[in-house]
Length: 102
Image (cartoon, rainbow, N blue to C red; front, side, top):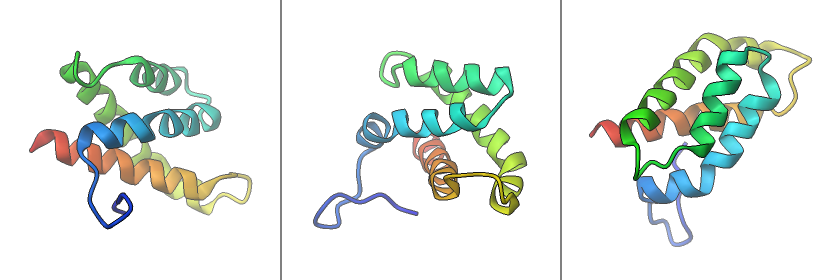
């Protein structure tokens, strides 16, 4: 899942974060009942990548690890709404994590 702008150009990490982070965090907040995960998503939504890259990356990693444990349950549950949003969020976390670590 690669996010592209019109014309096929790949977005920069900063553009991806700015455009996609609100939706990603809201998807997690609406689904989870784990207070730690909700807290991580809220903190991520309010953390500036440019100003605090270390905390930003820690939060990305924690949410990605949560999705690794949770994604199969999300895909298989007949009660989970917005499965595509979760798959997109999981992939966005992976993409952001990979781009930041380069």
